Image (cartoon, rainbow, N blue to C red; front, side):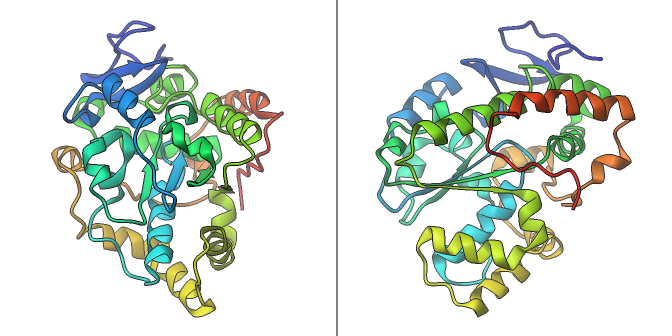
Length: 299
């Protein structure tokens, strides 16, 4: 099993997945391809002090947990139309978008990020910005992550066992899954003034129309039952996958021809993980026993 998810990196410093460069900031690992005008460390520092607006919404999630899905749902609710955004969510992904570009966006802004809560803008704690957090069971996250990573040419020969080794370490891109969820749970409990909509990928799959209605109430938008049904239909996995083909993605997605939609299922991990691999993740779930999550591995 690979250690630290690296084939040539060292713990505590920049690591490589195959030959894909990464950068580490405060113990969290990011792909260098996210860097635009400045190094990631400087970019994170600017995010922390960026000016927020009272009607801002930030969608937070660990990678491969349903961010694209929820971003489309939220965008439709905020505009009041079941129409797809012309651009992909990566155009407003905080770690991959210059602060200057985010500043120029019209209100209301629905930003999205895989950053840990410790790297969110300081003003979020003022309690005016709404936060949506979506989480997904770690076994399906792992499998989805594996299928995305091997699309990248330098990583095409990585095995699921290697990705699992990275996933269970502190050197996973996006950080350690369990550490990320613990930090979100702590943030919610220590900042009750911050409005947070905390939901699971699996809950959304079970009752998509109901979750769209709940999200609309959280956002404070006047969404009729007809609109909520239309949004749920437009944001079905099949329809989103088709719509995404015509979207204008950022350059790093074009360069690597990344396909963000694969199956969107719950329980696909059963087709990939061995008993031993599944049990390894089960044991790690103990790290979340004090957290307020309802994590389901099946529907």
